[in-house]
Length: 224
Image (cartoon, rainbow, N blue to C red; front, side):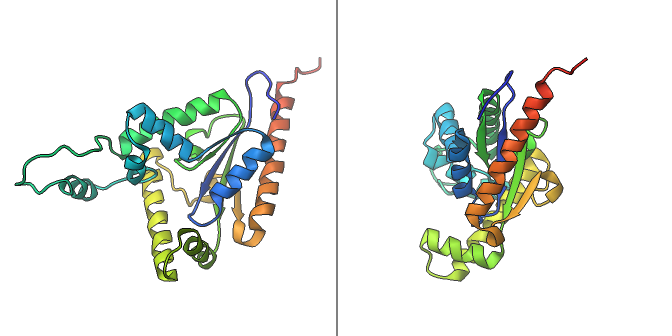
């Protein structure tokens, strides 16, 4: 994707679990010929925090309550047992602070597709920003989650979807002060259950090209 005077397209994708956000994000980045950032953000944050990415998974896109923090602390030993320092010494806020820096650096560096982590709010004021929300009917999501995670029942998949939606909602509200389910937060909202991943990807590709064209036109000198 062509750049001019440092202006470029950044697509942020917020998604409910099971709506195909990662798959669509990867395909879109390939079509646009730009960077794709999803778990790569967590891996880079872990490197900067000098932690194992697997150890930080529990905090990624998740805002822990006071009681959750307490339970995690006690999981490493009862109050009257000998003290043993927990293997992870960062929390969700520490992790997000680093991830926010990584997202902002990536947006400054060049075109990219960025999935999750409140990117739609963090990069709201960028001229080349295209914010997207992907959703799908719950029944479809549940079937997809069951297949992807090899779960034993649809009930397990439904519980996973519900938990993910709650945690992402709490996380986004806590760290960027936004309601992630409010459609006015986004430029485009797509039902991937109705459209399918192929059509959704194509629509976003065309939208990204239009944003790129508008950026180029805005940078052309006015005729006297």
